[in-house]
Image (cartoon, rainbow, N blue to C red; front, side, top):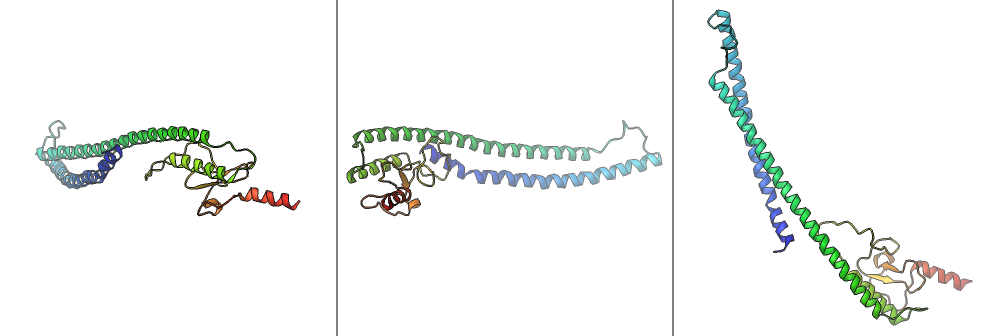
Length: 231
C-alpha cells in the first residue's frame, strides 16, 4: 500500500475517534454539572447550619475549627477529577488531529518530490524530441507543423500533475500560453504563423474540439493577414 493509501486509510478513522472523545467529554460535563449543583446545595446548607449554631452559641466562632463536611469536600475533589478527565480528552483529540496534520505534511512533501521528478523527466524528453524535429525556417510545412504539435502535446502530457482531490500551487516559473495566459493543460493547438507572439492555444479558448485540418491561425494572426491582403 502506497503512502497515499495509508494516509486515506488513517483519515477514515479520524471522525470516529474524535466523535468518541467529544461524546465522552459531553458525558463528563453532565456529570460535572450534577455534582457541582449537589455540592453547592450541600455547602449552602452547611453554612446556614454553622451560622445558626454560632448565633445560638452551640458552635464556637473560631474560623480554624469551622469547616465543610467530608462529604462536601469529597464532592469538590470529584469535580476536580472530572475536569482533569475532560482536559485529558481534549488534549488527546488535539494530538490526534495534529498527528494527521503532520502526516499530511509528509504526504505533500512526497507529492512535491514526485512532481519535480516528472518535470525533470518531461524536460529531458522534450529536449530529445526537439533535437529530432526539423528546424523550422520560413513558413512551416504541414508535416513539420504536425510534428511540432505532437511534441508539445507529449511534453504537456508528461508534466500533467497526478490526478488528486488536493489542489497544489502552480509553479510560478512555468511558462504560460494562450489568450487566457495560463499554463499548458489538456489539448493545445499551435498557430502556423512563425511570428505569432502567443504560438500555443487551448482548444476550449479558441473554440476547437479536434485538431484542425491544414494550416490554422489564431484570431490575432488571421486578422493581420486579412489586413495585409486588404492593402
